[in-house]
Length: 219
Image 1: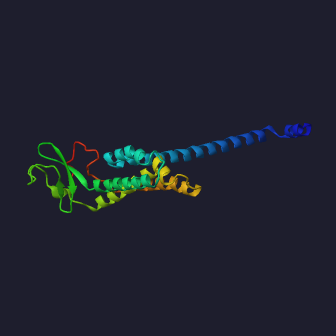
Image 2 (image 1 turned 90 degrees about the vertical axis):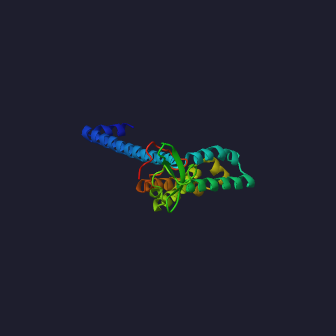
Image 3 (image 1 turned 30 degrees about the vertical axis):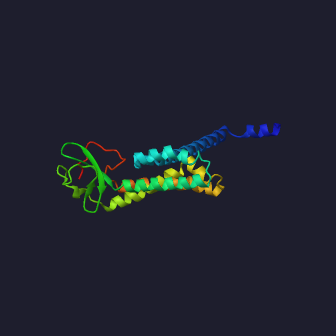
């Protein structure tokens, strides 16, 4: 013990200070890297959580309300697992079909909804069969970007469903460690890619289940 004290006493004070400075700088770098990685992960999870805003409101609400009922709060048997799968397929189909809907404002200011076609738009509840009082509906015709958005909407819904606790407990109640990692990583990756593609291919439609702004004359 006395030898160790003598050895430390022989070390110059400048070397001790340099060693302590290096340790402090390394610890600061590590803390900065950890905070950056945690911030990146937090932003990624936040972007995935915000993907629900890209889905039709009615579909998302039905998913949140019906999933606990159909899955029996995550405890499924063969019957409830089959019914849950049917529910997920129907909701995914709803997301797909909603991408081919749009809204139009009539001359009296009333907003009507309809389905887009290759020739224009079919307004569902408009009282005049001649479409008198509506703008040129051929401007609302189906485009390639609509198919892209329909596919992305289904993928987004799949990512949201895979992140749901009741759905995971129903279909994978006791997953292996590798399967658990896949279920954690795949929805995040799909969500990030879909959010990027939504920014690359933006849509100007305000269909059924989506937010309708005051200005629908956008073509």
